[in-house]
Amino acid sequence: MEFGAIASVAIVVAAICMVVRGWDVRLVLLIAAIAISIVTGLNAEPHDRFRALALVVREFLATFSNEKFVVPICSAMGFAYVLRHTGCERHLVLLLVKPLRHVRWLLVPGVIGVGFLVNIPVISQTSTAVCIGPVVIPLMRAAGYSMATAGACLLLGASVGGELLNPGAPELLTVYSKTDVSPTTQAREYLPPLVFTQLAISMLVLWVLSIWWERKSRADKLVPPGAKANEGHSPSLVLVEAPPETRINLLKALVPLVPLGLLFAAGPPLHWIEIPDSWVILPKDGKRDSAYNTRLIGLAMLIGVAVAATVSPSRSRDCVKQFFEGAGYGFTHIVSLIVIANCFGKAIEAAGLAQLLGQWIAATPQLMQPFAAFVPLAFAAISGSGMASTQSLYGFFHDPALALGLDPASVGAMVSLGSAAGRTMSPVSAVAMMCATLTGTNPFTLAKRVAVPLLMGVVVVVILRMSGII
Image 1: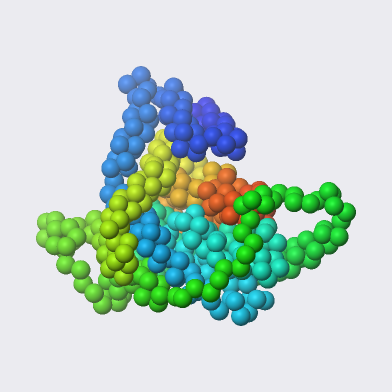
Image 2: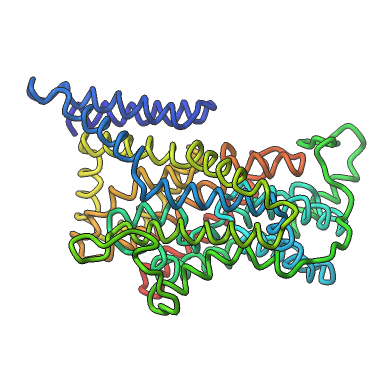
C-alpha cells in the first residue's frame, strides 16, 4: 500500500473519531476530502499536485447544482411539509393505527409496520417519527409497554427502509446516476425482496426481544426505590395519555399516496399514464431527455401538494410557503450531505482506496455481497446518515460489480439496505435522537435495542442473496 493510501486511511480513521465525538458529519467529510486530496498530490508529478483537489472542487460544484438530486429531494421534502401542515399525514397514521387499538398483543409489530408504511410516502425518517410518535407512543404506554420498548419500535419502523420503496429516495437517485436504472424500477423490482426480508426478520427479532425487555422491566420495578428509578428517562418529555379516538378523513389519509400512485402508474411496466415530455422536459436530439425521470418525481410531488391543498381549503393559503420551507430543509439536510459525500468519495477514489477494495473483491468475488451490505452499514452507523453512506460508497462497488458480471443496480440495492440499517442503529442519527426525545429515553439505549434485530436481518438478506434466492 502506497504512502498516499496509508495516509488516507489514517485520515478516514481520524474523521470517524471526530464524527463519533459529535462533530458535524458535513464538516468532517469535507475536511477529510480536502486533506486526502492534498496528501494524494504529494506523490504526484509537480504539474499534477493539485489534480485530486481540483477533482474534489469540481465534484462539489457539479453536485451542488445537479438536478438529479435537487429536484426530487427538495420537492419530496416540500411535499412532506405540506402533508404535515394540512394534517394529511396524521389522518393516514390514524387510519393505520386504528386496528391496533383492538389487538394490543400486536402492538410491537403493528407500530413497526405503521412506521414502515408511513415512511414510504413521507421519505424523511425524522418526519415519520414526529408524525406517528404522538399517536403510537401513548397507545403503547396505555398497553403497559416501557418507553424504551416504544422508542425502539418507533425507531425501527420509521427508519428500517420504507423510504427505499419510494422512487424519490436519495439512495435510489445515487444508483440511478451511475446505472441509468430508473428510481421507479429500483423501487418496484430491485428493493422489495431485500427490504421486506429485512423488515420481517428485524421485526420478528425485536418482537421476541421486547417480551424479554418487558419482563426485565417489570422485575426492575421491584428493585428498591433509587436503584434504577427513571434511568435514562426525561419525564417532562414522556407522552402518557392514550390518544383519543379521532374522526378519520379518508380523503386526507389517501393524499400522501398520490405521488407514489402517479409514479408507479407512469413508470414501467404499467404505463397506465403517459406524462407528455412537454410537461416535464423537452426531448433532446429527438430522444427523451435523461432528466425526464428526475423531473417526473418533482412533478408528482407538486401534484400531491395541489391535492393536499384542495382537500384542506382552510390551510391551503400557506401550502406554497410550507412547500418551499420543506424544500429548503431538504437542501440543507439532505442535498448538502450528498454534495459532501460525493466529494469524500472522489477523494477516496483519487487516493486509490476504491481500487484497492475492487482488487479485494476481484480476488474473492464472494466478498461482494457481504462488503456491499456491511461496509455501508458501518459507515452509516458512525456518521448517522444512510444517504451519505450510500453516496460515498456505492461508487466503490459499481465498477467491481461490472467486472464480475453482476448487475450494479442489484448491488446498489444491497448498499442502500445496509446504509439504512446502519443509520437506524446509529445513536447520532437524527431519527434516533428524535425517537429518544419523543420517548424521554437515551438514543444509545434505543440504538442498542435495534442493533441486534437489524444485524440479523442484514445477515439473512446477505445469505439469501449469496444463495441466489433473492
